[in-house]
Image (spheres, rainbow, N blue to C red):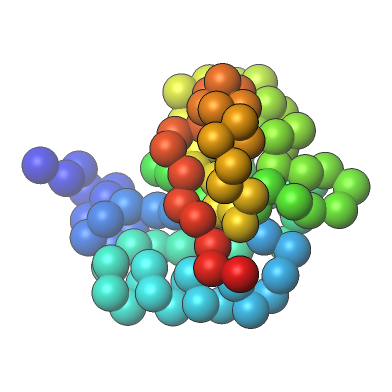
Amino acid sequence: MMNAAQQAKGLGGHILCVDDEQDILAISQASLETIGGFAVTCCNSGAEALRSIQETKPDLVLLDVMMPLMGGPATLKAIHNLPGCADLPIVFMTARVQPDEIKAYLDLGAAPSYFKAI
């Protein structure tokens, strides 16, 4: 059963999408809002996500692995170190899908990942 905050945000809660590619953010946001009924906040960088996360309080983070300055793994670690965010589910969105890469993401504490088409 959903709480009032989830109902106000949309059927599925709130998702924070973080990717440096604007087209990926646009497609993700449109799909998640239109088909999934989620509320979606988009950020273009790991630093922007860290500034946004305390205010938006997402239920899930979809996070690109390869971004300039602060990549996905560094962003995941920083998010999990924020107060109240240690158990926040984070799913990597990536085209990097070699078994050793996937294992490294899971070892960092990421949830099973979504793979981008390349």
